[in-house]
Length: 295
Image (cartoon, rainbow, N blue to C red; front, side, top):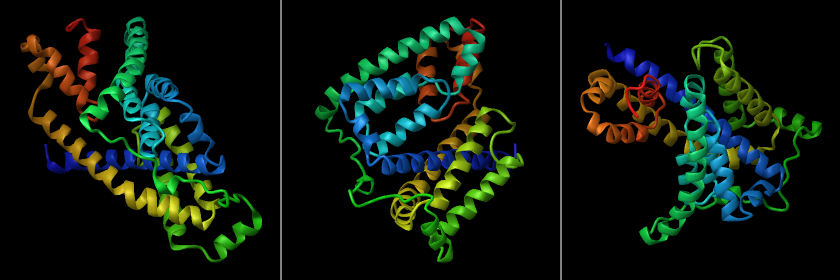
């Protein structure tokens, strides 16, 4: 296989994930500001509430709940134990496949993972201080001051925004519109019009409206200086690197054949596949279970 046949799909997939992460982080910033930080207070009402909410989001099929939890944690709204618990409860996109192949066992699995997420999240927070693990603190840019207001969709303010449009707003709007057009024309994003593409199109459209209507302060401090400069490039580099390593490993190593010939090590292999930050390799284990090859 040519290197371009590996790198180009990986690059596109990394871009899609990065766009999704950007959109979710922006939405959380936006909701936090327009609600004067009430979303933060809801999650901070108690650590036990964090375990419950993060495990519920993690247990939902697909990646949306996991992405939300990561965004909450980055913003300092979840404890280290809560984010660990949410990852334990998460099944990702394989949840949809499991529900179609073995729904009874899948629902039992989701229930068990939900309980484990809460219990082990609590246990992790007890152990974390002993290991000197410092949880992610709430970003200073996330503080909502009493004088700060969004003034969204105000006609007078909107006119001023576009009469003297800032460089940051122009770049963001241009990039988001191009991405939305490419996704709508099936040039960019998932290969077909499934729930993933529809979700991305809807969320990107909402993001364009937000970027086009919020004050310059929100554009500059919350989106550009915080999300774009501090997080976006890092998310893309780590995602691209992880996906590239996975693709190269799968190209030169027959994972399924290795598991079949080394059943004693199947648990170790399953755990290692579970650690890989990508859904594809996990499907091997799901399909083998569906066929009764592994317990």
